Image (cartoon, rainbow over all chains, first blue to last red; front, side):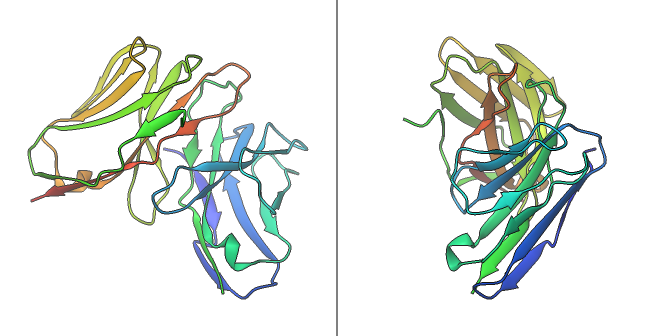
Length: 113
Length: 112
């Protein structure tokens, strides 16, 4: 059973606000990921990390930023939210070996008014 | 051409039916393949994981990979209303490559 937690589950907020989406995992996984998921579309990787102090941008350009100060914690921040940021954000983690499957949290559904 | 193609459906079947879900891929470097199940308002849950070609069975679920035709399948036997969900296929090349490439997902409804 994967133990990866995302908060908040739902967030409705006005334009221009600073937002931080939290993601924590208790499995000790080195790799963590953030995906964006829109209805009827593929998951798009926006950020990933190989471990503490490692962060990289994914395939889909995003105005968000991430940090990895602790192994278990991988927060995503939007400095100034816009309606175009409305989406579902999914966090995942995996063992360091590239062949290991990724385990997902239940996501944060973000709506920017 | 997308690296992983999946028919989004929707697919509606009666309870007890055998369900076949399929994806095709174009990247010959893909070595491992996954099926995820995603219920409404939840995150994807790993259902099946297969490395290279062949079959893998787990209860009512069977995953098949045919690397020669770049075709991956998930079969669900004796489908149940609780199987109603979106099913996502994913593929990766492993090693130092972290990436998974996902299909769009197929929405399945099993009617009682």
